[in-house]
Length: 418
Image (tube, rainbow, N blue to C red):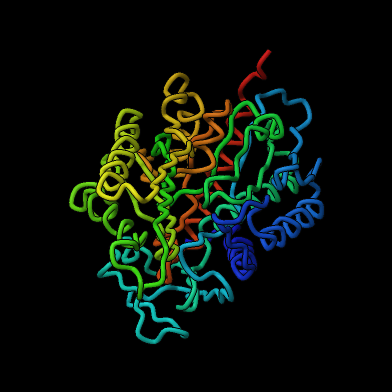
């Protein structure tokens, strides 16, 4: 069933998705790619045009804005967040969004990849979308609905509130964050910049999803320095860093602790990249677990494997550095479930049964919660993200928009904190 928000949501997602804003985990700059600011500046212009207040770009390249409270309403300040960057795992340049209006229930084909098929046989949720408006890319890029669907939802809900000042709501703070996909968007500065009592990320998948538990995450970098020499003179002298890197990979568990062999509440060690030469190799890993004991055990295992391989070749240097990324937001939210309960009620009010599972990943809310602002995650409709078969239903985005508006109304009934 079409809603009053469908046309706006479709227009926003199609426009936003066409903008290349891919982040880069190897870049030290803030944001990691200058092109993300193309999205940020556009959003600032649109926010100013719709009447939002305090529209600024923070020192961490976060777009911030305020929807003022309805006159006479004194309530806690709520935040809405979405991220402007798209994932670095797949091509995101030259995205050409395609709208499949009134989806007929069959296979969806792609103009730029004739052999590619998005089939309801492979993705059962798609089979439930008969008659809805489905947006995909053209086959050679991701779509970027992660998280431009969330951006479209937040912008549409914000515009609706600003144009309908009779709707009771408290002050709402908006934040559009860079570099979420590489785990660097939320810094310790954001809680003060956002100035919200609690917040929500719109960065989830299926309608009804309200998530308050995520992975805890660390990153591992293994640097291997061998002994380089001309291969013609290499007998008993050459120490090939590539061979030692391969030993590290082969010594790590392959059957029980990789992303492709785990599910549910199982954690993993994921080898992300291996670059370099016979002289020196740099390997990047991500470590994930829902519990800190499990995360620490995976870090200890990676270090142990590096030490074991190093012992086989004392002429090489093998360093293993493990750094903090984010932590399971459940650790803090379970102490006060009020923001979660409000989201569950807002979903029910929108006519859906809420579902709360554990995210096999993280959101900006994971870091924001850790830094002091409680921030569960709410769906925005994106499916099959980070690849060419990504899609989103406009009507699912409309459901997320209604949930946001339900939250705005429900906060108006609360008293502001003393």
